[in-house]
Picture 1 (spheres, rainbow, N blue to C red):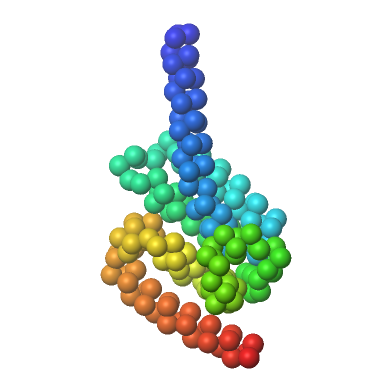
Picture 2: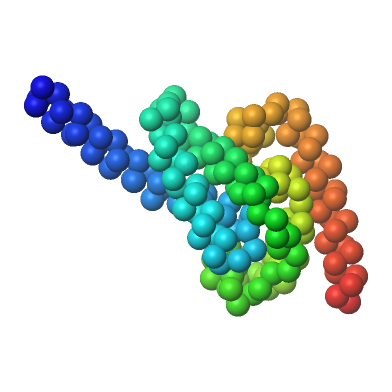
Length: 182
C-alpha cells in the first residue's frame, strides 16, 4: 500500500511540474484574455487567478493529442466570459495608458502610427460582446481559422463569416472614434 501511495505522489508531482512548465510557456494567453475582458488591475488579477485555477482543475482531462495553447485558450475564454457575466459593472469603455503602458510598448514595434491606433483598437475591442471579443483576440494573435474554430467550438466557415463582419464593425467604430477625436 505504501508503494502505491509513493507512486501516486510522484505522478502528481510530475503532472504539476509539466503543468507549471506549460503554463509558464503560454502565460501570454492568460494575460491577453485577462486584459481583453477586464477594465481594472484588480479584475485582471482576479480573472488571471480564476483562469489558472480552472486550467489546473481541467488539466487531468487535457489530451496531448491537441495543442496545449488551443486547449488553454478555450478554457481561458470560457472563464473570461463567465467572469463578465458574474460582474455587473460595465465593460471597460476607456483605456488608461499609464496602467497599460508596458503591454502597449511590448506589442508595438516602435511604429508611431501603430502606437496611436492601438488604444483605439483596444477601446473598440473592449466594447464588443464577449464572443466577438474572443474571436478578435484570437485573430489578432495570428491564429488560423482552423485553430479559432477549435478553440471557440464553431465551424471554420462560421469563423470566416463572423470575422469578416467583425472586421467591418471594428473599422466603422474606429472611424467614428477618429472623427470624434479630430
